[in-house]
Image (cartoon, rainbow, N blue to C red; front, side, top):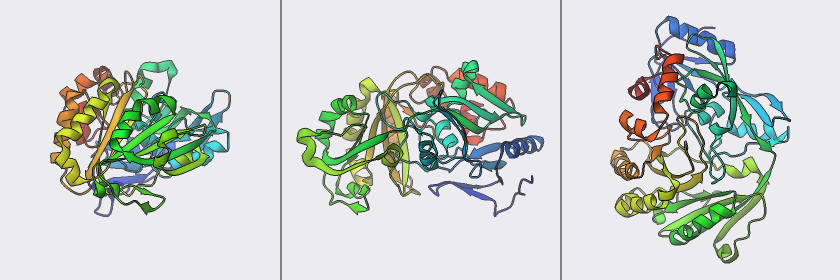
Amino acid sequence: MNIRSYNPENRWNNWFGNLSCEARIIDVASEEDMSQAVRRARSEGLSLRIAGTGHSNIALIPNPGVIATTDRLKGLLAHDIQKRTVTVAAGTKIRAMGDMLWEHGFSLTNQGDIDTQSIAGAVSTGTHGTGIELTNLSARIRSLRLVDAKGDLQVLDERDEHRLRAARVSLGMLGAVTAIELEVSPAYHLHEWLGFMPYATAVEIENEMNARFRHFTYFWCPNAKSERFISVDGVIREGQEDIACVRIFHPEPIEMGELEKYTYRRRYDRSYRIFAEDYVPEFDEMEYMIPLDVGRECFEELIRSLHDLFHEIAIPTEVRVTAGDDNFLSEYQGGPRRAISLAGHINTDNSRLFRACDEVFARYQGRPHWAKANCMTKERLKQLYPHFDDFVAIRRQMDPEGMFLNDYLRRWFS
């Protein structure tokens, strides 16, 4: 196997198109490929980052050394009906997993509203869906295989719970993940209800909807311009002021009573066909997870204090709730949180918006999504994550020379 030589044509680009770099790029198709890539990079003193589908809008991947892409490292490797687990190759796209799992009577227990990421990239950054009793994807990991900094294959499972809790959300800093064993659910269908209602109504029903239904989420649209970003079945609605686009998923038929007048769409299908929507990568996103007991207060302060900014930028803001877990760098470590996702326009300087939002989030102990814009310092991360030092200790043990770090990550985790 030859790692392609560094030249201007070896350019990596992310999904959004706002990040790129020149590097030695290798398209990995097997664990042996990955092992050789790591050993070669180590021998030459180069850093190495693993690229899934590049769905991060921040610099998790760019580095001047090696980038290992995983598009060919894909497929269902094993399934266990008794344990209700599946093992998939790290580069497998979440969208492709739907049919794969369904053929064996399984579905992912939860997933987000974008399904084009690789499974390893999604779990390694703490990607989540919605559901007050449902955890993010990484919390479903029962074991994973990775190539360590020496190029050797390691298997981390529940017999080594300490390192597994670090590896579930690791940003690729503990090694190059090649396969993941996930606990899944029996295959299931979902009903969807989608409606447009006044934002004040969505706030009023939020707690009840989270308790009644498996999944509840909404997009707040501050003005008519922002609503044009929500295209349902290819149709853009006539915009209005201060509207919420509400989505509810549930295994049983969804009865909305007096809220039925807000109905815009109903669907019923296999779960993985209901969860995801198609998004055009034209937004520059920031998402923070806020403790549940102050989540609404935080959001109300955000839209009150930054009213003019939100109206100027006019991109919908998404609100979701997800259950907690105990993984060291999980944004949901320690209990359920409300996720608040906002965005500016891609390839635009959004620093004014992001700094202003971060100031509000900081007052409520908000934790950022690891793959999205943030204003973190190492000191803040240590305060927000009780096991931050535990993670750093494991990272140093598994990769003492920091080969899997780049400049962006080194400032926090070296």
